[in-house]
Image 1 (cartoon, rainbow, N blue to C red):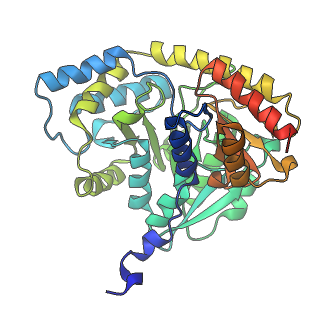
Image 2: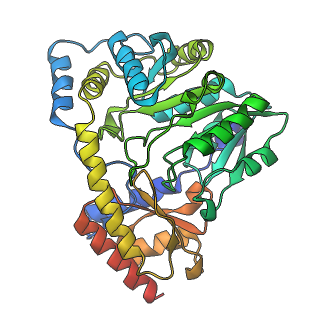
Length: 391
């Protein structure tokens, strides 16, 4: 067999993750005893609550360790429906829900089900690193819509309309957004929905950070605006950020019954059901209310406010104040370094790990995560300030 035929063409088109490269190097240095400040984290640093762990242990002890229905256990799907109705104003039936192995899995399922090879998928930039790679794996075409800090990195209808073609099939919308922390308000979502309806464009609404919003801003689910956009939207969420359950791998998707049925078929022949034990843990989380999530949100707002105060003293970095998630996206163009060089040198020379903006489609930016303690935020940003002064 010729060496160039060992891998499929679709995998050759997928880019490796520079995010994982930085975090892997940071972990290696830390294991060697180096004092690393980690601003690279894409997950809350809080432990999973004990009541969720207890539900998982009970599942194991009671023998709930077998296969479940592909799309999730009925009681979890019902609890998701109740959550979406109460918190998001979205009315779904259990047959419109697919529980998957994380929100990432849900998004991949949605793209793979909706997008054919001739289809175009619109992705506002900056974007979460995996969106374009998922589109590429589906053999569709990712098209990027560059947003600006002057508009808080939010998509405008003018930018959206310019990018639409006869082949446009999907728009991916992320609010609150990774990496920018931007949150769309009702008026902005209504304008986007109007365009999508006019052109019959499907929406994948990634709402995984919905519980982490600051300054009394309210999360709006675009599918809740009206029945027409509801019928074009796949709403994606999960337990990873709101309940610090990243390793439990439980996400979910809600959408029109015919699309959900197709996604169910796809999941039948790929992963099958998510972990039975994790599903019981997820059920306990959803039934517990928001006390844990709200306490975590308050702590993240304190950390955000401290990080902003410290960053304001670093004149070489520019940023917008994030309204949600736990990241600050910083313009590094004044340093005259590209983002990978900036991140690599910072880790080697100042022992601070962060993520290069190249991973998110903006090589003149870096992403700082404040999913770490107050002491680490102070120490890490002081190190960045001193390192930049000595460039």
